[in-house]
Image (cartoon, rainbow, N blue to C red; front, side):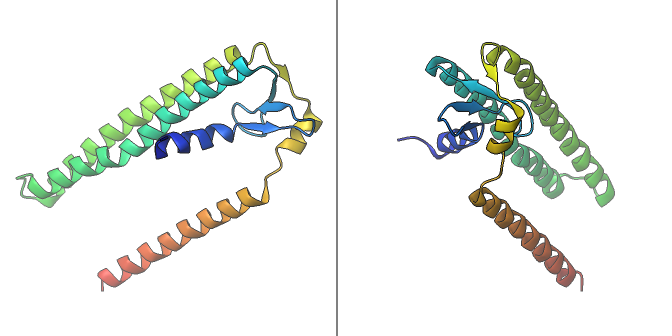
Length: 171
């Protein structure tokens, strides 16, 4: 049985690949507006998929670890630190949280640099897709637009809910 995380990463990797009208596989290393490459052989496809999955897995794990690594030390220091003025506790908490955030952000930036440097090596033997075909392939599908719209609406509703809760808690 494939884990939920692995399926999620497979879905993220699949977003980098599309089929052109003739059935050839096309790889978009960064965005659909950037360069695109034809992938003609199965070994090349497997090599590219494994590299992209490794990058996405590492970045996603860093993203998942960011919140607990920021929230847990902050909660412990805020709740159990013996400093009496609240200002000193908050300064220490914010300092530690910013340190953790900077370390994780630097790690993510380093991984992005590694991926960016690896793409030319992965695509050296592949032929580049022309601009006319790339425009056809990069059009957003209706299901993707619906998913993005739902995500935006959910984030907007969450923000409104937080504002309403904050307003009523300070009355």
